[in-house]
Image 1 (cartoon, helix red, strand yellow):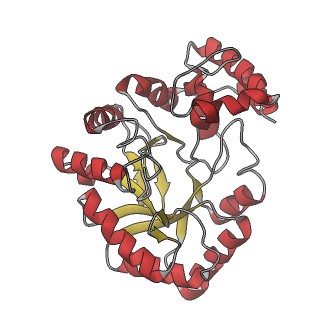
Image 2 (cartoon, rainbow, N blue to C red; image 1 turned 180 degrees about the vertical axis):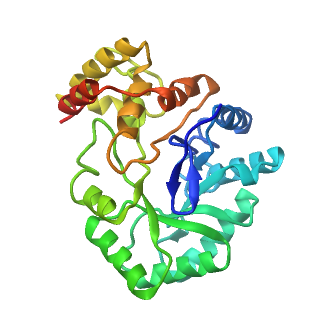
Length: 313
């Protein structure tokens, strides 16, 4: 399948990123390999992970997702065909953005991913105890050494993002090309406004996480339903708001018009938003993937976008 690509600096990525947070957590290695194979077969090439995934699971310490992806890359021999994004700054024992932390963490990620370069390297969380010039210099060193191709930011305030971009321009350092914000139909104020304005002004591509609101925007969480899932508590919280049920109703209307899954419509809405290059969505099983990939072929009408905008306002 041929899928159009979006540019993130020098990188060319599919407009749907596969979230790797479930690999080594709710998906074992065999299921993870199957999901990765199906995603690539469906035209995807943009895989998102972090050195911290999935330290929150009993017995894990972080790096499990990278290890699974690295084993898959080695087994398939397809490293040059995929864009691998990972993150630094949140793994236990390697938190923050000091120069020493970044330089130690990147080598750990490279080892687990079984590669000699990372395509897109995110600062997972801003570390305001470190001057932007320090961590940008450390990241610039990684780019110059060939360990990282492009850099990006996640979980950063608009002022610190602006300060970082100004520092890169002033000092001639590697510059953020993308931003990974929390953004979806039931969480718009986590990105829209000042942060989105900075991204638009500087030409940064947004790669939103929680694109399906922990599964809520798949439509399987409804009033009176009880879903046995690792994410059900997070998803269910949206039912307690006025916005959640209102958004589901609008998604039902649009999905019916296209004979599409609700998740497909939610991702298509996000992909159509200003600055958004590629929403991130994860699949625990191969069966969950088709509704995600279908978003690549779904174009919503202006009236449908307006309906969803108003329902989610």
